[in-house]
Length: 264
Image (cartoon, rainbow, N blue to C red; front, side):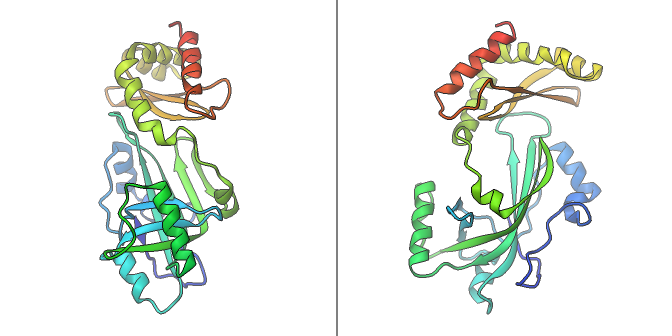
């Protein structure tokens, strides 16, 4: 979702956080996140596709009829300050499915000439199924001014240089399929992993893990996160791999080691 807060184009808009919670700090918003309900989007348009350039800018494909694209087309300034909000929702059925949110603030610009061609090629390579840039679609570039992440690991700001230098997780394109496979085909092994919570959590969390359902919540190159839930109570546990995964075939080895450690 993109929003245009009406800030001075010379300054990036403020992100939610200490001293500026925005809607994310209100009690209705906190309640909605606890319950895992999606937010009603009142922003200026959701991109049909997006990718990141080697320099750390974000290329967006917007419906030309959306308010963000119209604002970009009619503004007199070369750049429009915007905030893009991204919501990470678990691809499996689990209480409190929203795993995190990220906000990226910066300046939206229309790429022109050779830069437009370059951005279109980058987007097509990342999303070959996306609509081609042309009538009905607006290609835009978001120059990152600041970013903030609030997820299962905590909340913290992200510097633009760190954002530009970050590499995509090799498991990210496959995470949905892998988590759904684990949930349907490896429920007994997941329950045995959940039993290991007895050594690392509170008494209440141990009871939840022992008697509740155990669901795979997140998977990345560094490990697996499970969520045990019962009667509205949840307990999470993170299980690190012995070494980071660089290629998908290595996942089988690391998952086998986790299952063996759980007594499979």
